Every structure is written in structure tokens, then in C-alpha cells.
Image 1 (cartoon, protein in one colour):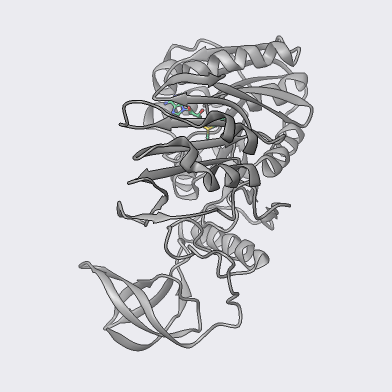
Image 2 (cartoon, rainbow, N blue to C red; image 1 turned 60 degrees about the vertical axis):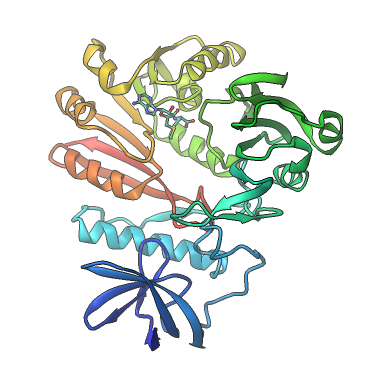
Length: 403
Ligand SMILES: C[S@@+](CC[C@H](N)C(=O)[O-])C[C@H]1O[C@@H](n2cnc3c(N)ncnc32)[C@H](O)[C@@H]1O
């Protein structure tokens, strides 16, 4: 236990920073300027982690959150801030990381706001343990039971409130929702038999399907989403952005940065979303994605949106790129959090396309990859999209130009 600790700053994960005997301590739920008593929870050679046991002085920036699970469920680390302060936090985080990593970007960084900072999540993955539903506490398997999540849409919360109708004792439940409130449930459970109270569940939400241990046991194994005039079919195991409001902003940004008649290679293309959005401005598009259903969805999505200039290819990017013998002038990248692998980065450096549009959900791997590309590319545009409001995560939109 340590008393009267002054919080100096926030780290990249929204934790307070202080020092005890010159050793850094990361303190959950502690804001700069606050004076607190703390209890150390982890002690390592180079750092310590702690929780607050008493607040002596609170920050004027701190707000009272409506979420009863804040600081427990490990989800929204920034709920102690009002929305605009969360954006300032993200902006400062990026500026700080750019400075520390010598990323050369001198323009003002725009932060694109989420018009719905609450109830924006259209996908939520929950745990069910001993018939209780919730999230695991950070870095543990302790379930924090919840009745609702402030970030999720109201039909998703309706499923959570009625999860007992699923009669599941243990397992994972992923709830996916479309903008017109259709619900697809994906359940993975060691429970042997299902005994879902379907008619009661259907009276609560617009249920379109249930996939139970990879088998469709009700309705269909996909749902549709309509965004900016495009219709997308999305299978239960295919990626789709969780926040439709910011995804529409992403589409706008992308379109405005695609030159007319460009030839595009898109890597990590999901259900074809970004390629489809660029199709009308492009001559030809080649897209690569690893999930089979996502490629099937992509071909279907091209058809229903009357688009015929995209070739979707199934495969692991790192194995596929070396076999690609194509010309492209624009490369679109939207990898998962781990970013690009060495094979893909080297492929880029052998092809050197004039323009790269790099969309990233992890600022640290993005910076690592930008450093790899910086010998040949300038960072021309950089924007933050607030895809994951009230969490420390952020979506980045980058345009790189060949020098
Ligand atoms: C962040 S999502 C982007 C999807 C799409 N661009 C969109 O906006 O909806 C990343 C995608 O990469 C795919 N993926 C992950 N690893 C991959 C790999 N090694 N090769 C090809 N695709 C991969 C995932 O299945 C997912 O669809």
C-alpha cells in the first residue's frame, strides 16, 4: 500500500502513471492531477501495476459513469472522461507515439468523431460461465456478469437481458446486429444439446439465425447490412466493422482518396466492403482474404451491387502475394491488429505502388509498418477515426505516396 500518490500522466491504455522509488507504476482508473492511495497488484523488474484504494483529490475532468461494470469488465477504459476528452486522449496518444517513433507528419491530425459514442457496437462477444453471462475481468477468467453493455445496440442488449432463453451453461456467445436491428447469434458451447426457447426469443428480437457449434440450427448463418447505398451479405464467421457510423465515414474518406481509373490491390478484404466501395472509380480491383465464407460473400456482394470489375481471391496474404503477377497502382491494406508480416512488407517494397492506403485498428503495429516503409513512402494523410469510442483503441486512415 502506498499513500498520497500524485498521478502524473496517462499511458497509452488510459492508465494513470506515477513513480515510486523511481520505478514506474501504472494505476487503473486514475487521472492526471489526482492524489490517491494505491495497492500494488503486479510487481515486475521494470514496472508495477496498481489499483486505487482511496481518492484524496479527484480530477475536474473525471465524470461519473453510468456503467456499473466500469473498471471491472476490462472493456471501456475511458469511461471516466466525457466524450470530447476521450478524443483528446487519442489525439495526444498518436502525437506522442509519432514523436517517439520519429514519424514524419507535420499536418494537423483530424479526429473523426463518432456520432453515436454509445450504443454503436453491432457485434459483441460474451462469455457464459455457470449460467451467468458477461465479460472476463482483464487478464483473468473471472466472469463479470452484466445485464447490458452501454456500447452495444439496444437489440444486442435485449438478447443479453434474455440470454436465459438460450439455456446455455457454459460457452461463448457472439451477437451480431445489422443497422435495421436484425440479430444473428453465434454460439460455441461444450453443452451437448440445445434447448433454446425460440418463440420467446423471437418475440424479443428480430432473430434471423442461430449458428450453434458451427451448425445453423435456426434461420440462416448470415445477415445483411446496408451502408451508403451498398448491400453486404455477412456470414457468421466473416469480419465486418463493428461501428456502422464510422464505417460510413471510412467509406467517404476512402472514395475521396482513390484516383479515377486506378488499378487496385486490396489485401485483407473481408466481405469485399472496401473494394466494392472503390469499384466505380477503378478499372480493376484484385482482393485477397483468408476466410472462405468472406470470399463467397464478396462474390455475392459484387453481384447484388451490380459490380463486375473485382477479382476476389481466397488465400493467406503472405502466401498469395508472391504468386501475384499483376500490375496495380494503388494498394489498400486493412490488416488485423497484428499488422503486416515481413513477406507482405517485402512484397510491397518490390512492387512499390505509387499509392498505399493503410487502414489500421492498431496504432502500434501501424507505426512499426510505417517505419518499414518510410525509406520509400511519405505519409501524406493521416486521420483518426473514432471507431471504438470510450476504449483506448482507435482506427487510423493513412495515405502513403511513393517518393
Ligand atoms: C480488419 S479486417 C478488414 C476487412 C475489410 N477490409 C473490411 O473493411 O470489412 C481484416 C481481414 O483480414 C482477414 N485476414 C486476417 N489474416 C489474414 C491473412 N493472413 N490473409 C488474408 N486475410 C487475412 C480477416 O479475415 C479479416 O477479414
